[in-house]
Amino acid sequence: FVCENNQYGEFTPQSKSTRIEKLSERAAAYGIDGFTVDGNDVDAVYQTASRLVSKMRAGEGPAVLECMTYRWHGHMEGEPEKYRSQDEVDSWKARDPIRILQERILSEGLSSVEQLAAEQAMARSEIEAYRTAHPRGKEGRVVYDLRRDFSTTPEQVRSRFGAYLDRFPVR
Image 1: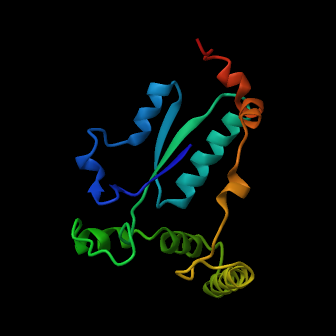
Image 2 (image 1 turned 60 degrees about the vertical axis):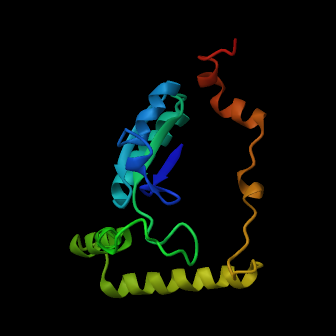
């Protein structure tokens, strides 16, 4: 289970709605491991997620991965955002994970500025092609049927996590 913790529940800071700093600590109540990583550190997220996926595929059960990040925009379009300061938003924007990853790639000599620009242009082209090929909602956003790709039957859950679930028989 992945929790993208953006520090807020709608308009309420997490610090005002729970006493714990890491929501991943709640996993222990369900008998599963919980881990928290810097969600703006692409390498940390990838390394931890890869390790957890390997453990799950080996039958060691599920886990919670909490990725600490930040929501740059308000909860809804057009809201006044009076519940947080501009300084807070700016400090998190300075930790932009894409910019940080690009700087790391360049500093380690894994790519050039030109290669990164070409990759960005290709990604923008693919996104535009997708938007053109798919219907849009009334706000102009791409409509996506989550049920199509994420529907799971009880049988699928049992086949993937049966060995783990058997450790906790229903009484």
